[in-house]
Length: 261
Ligand SMILES: Nc1ncnc2c1ncn2[C@@H]1O[C@H](COP(=O)(O)OP(=O)(O)OP(=O)(O)O)[C@@H](O)[C@H]1O
Image (cartoon, rainbow, N blue to C red; front, side, top):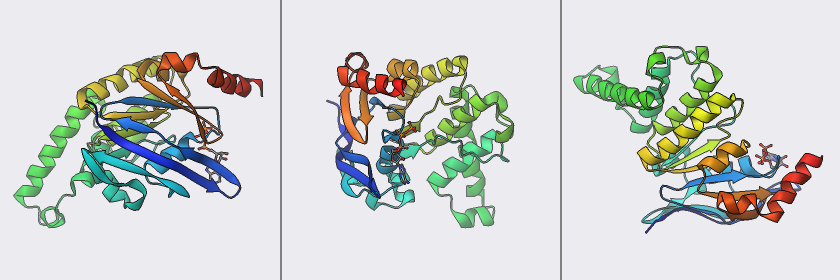
């Protein structure tokens, strides 16, 4: 039986007069791949910011489970949230540009494993052992993403599509239980998008993690998602399988309305 790993209860946030997320109730199970779609300004990124604890809700909450209730996301510090198993990528790329690809991944791992500061300062044997283990794990991750060949390249010198992939590798490096991807295909060319579609599926299968993604590329989101939630004006408009959503009259109207403007 699949276990619920995340569940929201009447999740809402208001900015002045705008209710950007309005009493949204969603849930995700272990190893499930969920797409979050909706017209521009529907509240998708704001919902992500609530789910990952960046924003505090005006009303409602986000609970995480691991067989039992782990805690309410927005009551935890960012470090505690990472330890609860949440990782995300952002619409705009946030890499350490002047560090190599390998260093970028190792830094992400290190922030998660919390290397012992004194070991590092004193250069104790345990420091070198820790460093070697991290390097090994980082290289394994890069190899899955076909990026071992660029491990010594500075992040800033990578082509755009590879920078986006590196962001996903960095998020995976923290060994999350839930991975949030905010428009991972934004700005990618069709070939890069096709490669990414395969990779997202591969990550879900190999790492057995829950993935929740926002994506405007309908081919990608319909190809990878097992279930979709559709937002409109901050409210949940529909949920269902890709086939159900593609035939949902309310969803078609919401998207056609967007194209009319
Ligand atoms: N910090 C904020 N302050 C005020 N209003 C905000 C803030 N963040 C979002 N909003 C408003 O909330 C609504 C939802 O915005 P959001 O960015 O979440 O939509 P979205 O579905 O992610 O859009 P897009 O697909 O264009 O990225 C919009 O009306 C937006 O202007």
